[in-house]
Image 1 (cartoon, rainbow, N blue to C red):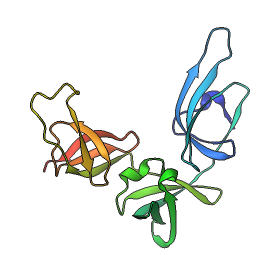
Image 2: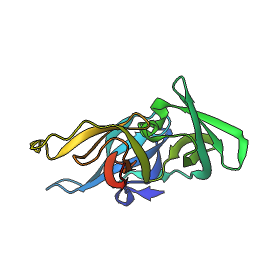
Image 3: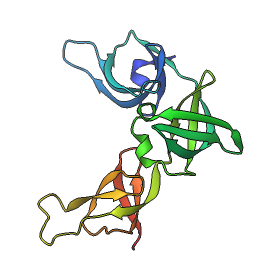
Image 4: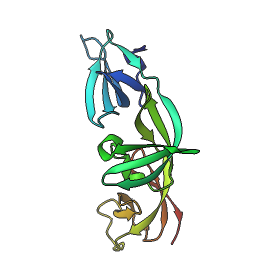
Amino acid sequence: MLSYNELRPGHFIVYEGSVCEVLEADFLRMQQRKPVMKVKLRDLMSGKVKETSFQQSNELEEAELERMKARFLYENKGEYWFDEAGNPKNRFKFSAQELGGKEQFLKPQTEVTALMFRDAFISVQLPVKMEFKVVMAPPAIRGNTSSGGTKQVEIETGAMINTPLFIEEGDVICVNTETGLYAERVEKA
C-alpha cells in the first residue's frame, strides 16, 4: 500500500478498479486545511485521463505489473499489433484509444515494453527517445521568428512535431516520446 504523499509521476496504482499511471502529482498544503495530493491519472484500460485528489486517510494499492519485451508489428484498421520478443506466436493488440497517443510514434519493428496486469496486456512503454526521418518540412522563411523560431514538420509515422527552423526534409531527428517534443537533429539530409 502507498500513502498519498508517496505518489510520483510514473507510478502505477489501482484506482476505481483499473490500473492508472500517475502523470502529475502536486502536494498542496493550504491554510487551515488538511494537505492533499492533486494528481492527474491515465487509466491504462480505457486511455482516459482524469484528475483527482488524495488525502491523508487514503491508502492506495500499488499495481504489480509484469513487464515483457515486445515489438510493434503493424497497424490495421485502428488496431496496433505486437508480438513477444523471441516468441512471434504470442501476439496481442491495442486500439489507438488504449495506447493514448503513443501510436503516433510507432514504426514497424520498434522494441517496446509490454505491461501486463493479472495476465492481461494493458499498455506498452516506448523508448524515451526515438529517431524519426522528417518526410515533410515547410521552408524556413527568413525573419520568421515571431513564433519563437519553430516550425511544424511531419515525421515518418505521420505525427507533427515542432522543430527549430533549420530542420529540413530528409533530416533524422530525435523525439522525446513521453512529451512529443523535438530533442535534437541526429543526421542532416
